Image (cartoon, rainbow, N blue to C red; front, top):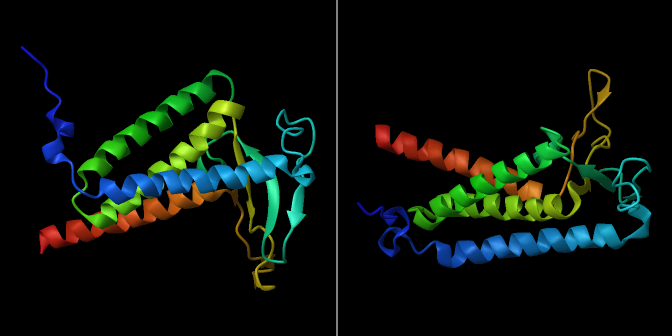
Length: 190
């Protein structure tokens, strides 16, 4: 008895991959170029602070945004920090999810689904490259400062996470995917 892999046959692939795969490449390239800039800029002290013994640096851009180097050993926005063998387990899990999402993308019937999956996969691959090379991901986009001087019950309003282009792509893609799937579910019930 032969096992067939018709779930990825040419007949089941849609045309969305023709623009979605290049979009993944663009996301990865932009992400890696921005991280290469951070790694090469002395003010960030990125490689010096990789082991956690030295403090990472930053560049003040405006009252709303700074570039603040930090090494993220977890997933998006610092969740699930992992070192040692857990780093490789996390690497394997994220890789498997990226492969699964890529297969889904190749078969996506709607452009919004393909767009969402391309954003998520591009971001995942960008962060996987860092995780493989350094054991952690370069995060540097920082909106932690107070926004427009607003206060909520005496606390400055801001965005509490430091992230990168890959994280932004993953987050936007996840939101698009959620909305896309909710709209599909709504269309099926009506």
